[in-house]
Structure formats: structure tokens, C-alpha cells
Amino acid sequence: MRKILIILLLIMAAPLTVMGQSRKYISQFSFFQSYFNPGLTGYEGSALRGFIRNRWSGFEGAPRTMFFSGELDFAEMKGARDPSLTGKNAVGLNLLFDKYGAFAETGLVLSYASRVRLTAKHNLRLGAGVSYTNIKLDGTAMTAEQQNDEVLGKYIGGFSDMQIVDFNIGLALTHSQYYISYAMHQVNGGRISSGDDFLDGRPVNYIVQAGYREALSDKLAVITNIYFRSQNDLFNNVEFNVKALLMDKFWIGGGHRVDYANNLQVGLLTNRFRFGYVYEFPTNGSYHFPGSTQEFMLVFNLFRKNERRYADEVLIW
Image (cartoon, helix red, strand yellow):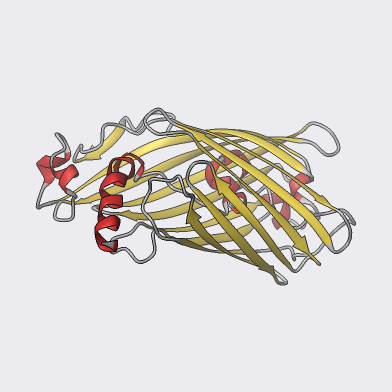
């Protein structure tokens, strides 16, 4: 009986899963701001970043996402004490690999950001990025619904791939305690493509991020972040998280993806590293696949240490 119920849940979830299968979720989104907004490239200085995300643990063929990036702030390379305020230019390179069912997607984004100083503590950051995406389709691994699809059905039993070049733009208002940003992904709608044409363009993504952090004492700081993403062919994605940083050494917290999932977060700071772990589980009202999701994150500071430069500084977002 239990197996029958699980099968029924999977069948009910299939339409929503197919529609949203290419959306990339990152529970620890606040550590990867520049991926979502090129204007935030180098906002926290020069660093190497990465995460691995395993969704719906225990199900064969479940989605898996891997991400790696590098950011260089030119002012920090020259020895600037606080590049978030003094740095004027930064570059970044993002590499993302996502496997979901019959599809395997590899994305590369080269981004550039420039800062305009507004006040002693406020900056306006502008950025742009060029993205290259390679999507492979394994026609032997398609679901019954995909096989009956008018476009995808032509690729049953074979292997196909397509390449897409597009652009991202973004701007952000930043302060040491808060930020708010707006970005657009796939500005050209995926119109520059080659290879097999099994996707009808790539809808524009509109992304808003914001955060606030404050040191309550020398041993406790609180951080909250919110994220909103919209595109024409999918439901809006809204999520937020709240963390407490203790003794500048480790953090605990939680997050919520509206109508989808909750998560618990823990992390550790060393001299130059930040380690994070998330355990995510679907909400009771979610019609997505059952099962948990695990996400591991690592950030390495290239030049600065994880230590306060002034009394009320907070070390993480």
C-alpha cells in the first residue's frame, strides 16, 4: 500500500516537475549573490565559491546541481582594506552543472561589475554578464510525458544537444549592513542558439535580492535575506532565511521557500573558509516529489581573513 501511495504522489507531481525542472534552487542563495546579480560580483571581496545540491535523496535519477565560481576585486588585489567600499571594478566566472532526468545542463557566466560611490557608506553597483549554456538531452531517459511531447518526442532514443548564448544585467544598492538588488537573466530570451532546437527559447528571469545584518554584541550577530524570482512560464519563487552568527565562528538558522520547502542551516567559519550545510524538506502542502534535499557549500577568501575590521562588522550574509 505504501508503494502505491508513493507512485500516486509521483504521478500527481509529474506535471509540476516537468514545468519547473530547469529552475535552479539554492537554499544558501545569500552566499552566491553574484551568480544571481552580476552587479554584486566582488561585493564581499575576492573569493572562490562552490556548492553541491542533491535533491529528492533516495530517488534514482534525482536532480543534482554543482556550482563553482571565482571572483576578483581589483582594489583588494592591490591591498585595499575594505574593497566593499573602495573597490571600483571586479570580475567573476561562474560554472554550473545541473542534471535533471533526461537533461544535463552546463552553464558558464563571465561577469563584470563597477561601483559608483554615493555616500561614505553607500555604493551603487552595476554589472553585466555573458552566459553560455550547453543542454544535452538523453532521448533514452525521457519520461512518458516527455515522449508524448510534440517537440521532445522527435528525439526519443537518441542524443541531442543545443547551445545558447545570452546576457545578464543587474544593479544593487549596498551598505555594510544591508543591500537591495535587481537583475535580469537571459535578457535576449535565448534567441542566439545552435544545435538541436528542442527548447523554445529561454524566458527572461527577473530577480530581486535583499538582506539586512547587525551585530548585537561581540559574540552575536543576526542576518536575514530574502529572494524573489519571476519568469513567464513558472510560478514565482519566493524564499528567505534567518541566521544567527555566534562568536564569529559558526552559524545556525533556517529558511523557507514559499509553497515548497523549509530548511535548517548550520555553518562554520575558519581563518579563510566558510562551510555551510542545509537540510531541506518539503512543506506539507507541496506537490513536489517527497524526500529531503541536502546542500553543501564552501567559500574560500583569497586575500582577507574571516575577522572583524571594525566593532559592528558582520562576517557573513
